[in-house]
Image (cartoon, rainbow, N blue to C red; front, top):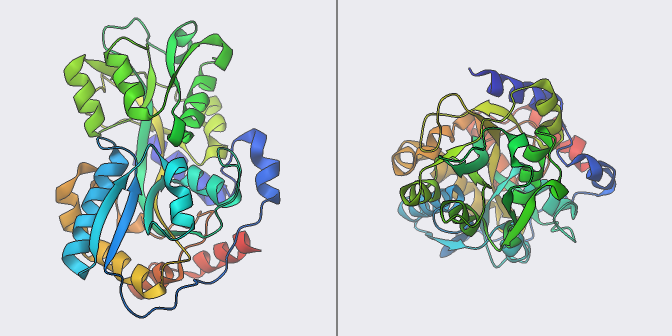
Length: 347
C-alpha cells in the first residue's frame, strides 16, 4: 500500500468535514435532508440516465460502462448524458429528470448543503456507490515546459473557472496553495469546461491546467503535444491543505504524462442518485454493477479502482440511498459503523 493511500485512509477514519477551510462554518450549519424516498414504485423504470462530464473524461468513460452493464444485466435501458460538469446537471438529478450522476466526494457534499460552488442545496442527493478510489488529478504542462514545480507557475497562464464544472477550480486552488501560489500570482484564462482548458495547454493558449490522470482526454492532448504532470509536494503541509477537502497526496500510477516519480491528489469519485428514485430501482442497478465488476474492469482501467471495499464507504458525508443500503447489507459490507455514520450526519 502506498504512503499516499495510507494517509488517505487515516484521514478517512477521522475526517467528517470535507469542505474548504473558509466554508467549514457554513457547512456545519447546513442541514442534510435524510428523508425517505418519495417513489414507492415496485416496477423498474424502462430507462435510466447517468449525468457525466464531457466525452474524453474519466466520469464519461465510467458512466458509459455503467450504463452498458445496466442495460445488459437489468433490462433497464442505460444511457449517458454528458454535461460540462455537475453544476450543470445537479438540478436535473434533484428534480428527478436524471437518475444518476458521477461526482466527487467534495462536490457531493457542497451540492447537498448548498455550500461552496452551489448557491442552493439540492437536498434529494443520495449516494448509490462509493465508486473509484483513488481518482487522481494534477496540474498538466507541456513536456518541454520549464515549469517543474507548483511555485514555477507564478506569472504563468492557467486555465481558470471551468464553468459547469466549478469543482475543478477548487481542486486547482488547493494545488496552487501547496506551492505558495495565489490566484493573483497567475494569469487567469477562463474556459467553460475542463476539456477545453486541458486542450489549451497543448495548443499553447495556457501554460497549465488541472486534469485527471488516465483518461482519454490526456491521451488526446498528449498526441497533439507531449505533456506531463507536475510533481506535487508530498509533505505534511500539503496533506494539511487537502485534508478538509477529503483528498490526499498519492503517488501517480505509470501512464501518459507521468514522467518519473510524480505525486498528485487522490479522492473518491461517487455515483449519486436521488430520493426520487425508488428503492427497488436503486437496489437492482447497484446489484448489477456489483455482480458485473469483472466485466466493468474490461471496459475501462478506472474500474480497477472500483473495488467492492470502497462501495460502502464509512466516511460518507451524504446519506446512502435506502436501496443501496439494502443491497450492501445483503452483500455483507454494511456494518454498524455505517449505521452510526448515518445517524451522525443526519442528526
